[in-house]
Structures are given as structure tokens and as C-alpha cells.
Amino acid sequence: MNHEEIILNRLEQLEKEIAPLSDSARSISELKDELTPRVNEAVKALIVELADIEADFQLEDLLFFIKKALRNIRNLTYSLDQLKNIIDFVLIAEPLLKSTVPQIIFYMDDLEKKGVFTLFRSSLEIIKKTAETYTAEDMAQIGDGLVKLLGSFKKLTTPEALEVLDRAAEVPSRVDLSCAKPAGAWGLLWALGNPEVKEGMGVLLELTKGLSTLRPKEIQTNT
Image 1: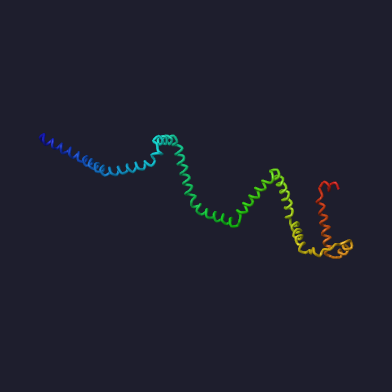
Image 2: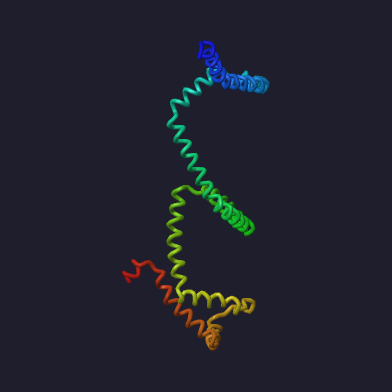
């Protein structure tokens, strides 16, 4: 093989090696030609959009924001973790809330229809007026008195006391006060002949015995 053939072979090999590079360069050139108009359009659109915030945006503010973000990267990471936890909680609680919230709304609406909130507002007005009328010392004294009254009411809830009160409540319906007339000593003696009057006097005597408990304990002890 002479020198000319060797040179031709090398040129052929170089041509084969350069061919892919030429194809790549051609493809890149075509891609550049296709992207150039798109890039120009994007740049123009970006310029138009940035023009709206030109008065409110300063490069120094962006640099300050970047520095601030870098200094607080741990806090940002922690905040993102907490945000993820909140999102997970919302996703878990959402089905429960969908079924619970309507029930709560229905229950509150039912209370509103029954006048519970109106009664509550009226109670607040009463408490407000009470606070304006009485001092804290007065309220403490009233509270002590109410405690004692509750003790008295508790005694009235015994079966015996309730039976007496129930029978006493029937008395007004059995008495005709329009028939009441002045009565002297003879009238009282004459009335004692009535069996009902006798029974009433017996009840009155029993009640009179019980009235002795109204005397102070010190006086009862001395006597």
C-alpha cells in the first residue's frame, strides 16, 4: 500500500468520525432555530409580567429574602413537617367531620327552636343585672343563704313532708271562705260538735306540738 492509499484511508476514517458530529451539530442548529422564537416569546411575556411588579420589586429584597431563608432553613423544614402533619390530620378527620358537623348543626338548630339559647341569653341578662345591683360580698351572703335553703328544701322532699304538703294543697279546694262568719265562745263550743272541726282541732294540736321546734335551741335547753 502506497502513501496515497494510506492518506485516503485516513481521510475516509476521519470523515466517518466527523459525520456523527456534523449530524449532531445540524440537529442542535435545527433545535436552536425552533426554540429561538419560543424563547423570544417567553422572554417578552416575562418582561410584560415583570413590568407589573417593577415598582414593588427590588433585587435587594430578593437577596435579603434568600439570605433570610437560608438562615432559617431548619425552621422552614420544621414548618413543612408540621404542615404535613396538619394535612394528614385533616385527611383523617375529614370523614368524621362530614358526618359529625351536620349532626351538630341539627342539634344546635333543635336547641334554637326549643328556645334554649333565648333562655341562656335571658339568664345572662339576669346575671348582668344581679352583678350591677349586688356586690361580691352580697352575692357571697346570698350564696350562703341559698345553701341553707337547699338544706331546708331537702328536708321537704322526705316522703312524710311531701305527703303533708300534698294534703295541705287540697285544703283551699275544700274550704269556702264566703261562708265564714264571726264566732264567739259559744260559737266555738257549738262548732266542736262538728266531727270535721274536731278532727281539724286534733290536727292543729299536733301541728302546735311540732311548732315547738321553732324556738331557738338555747331556749329549749334552758327550759
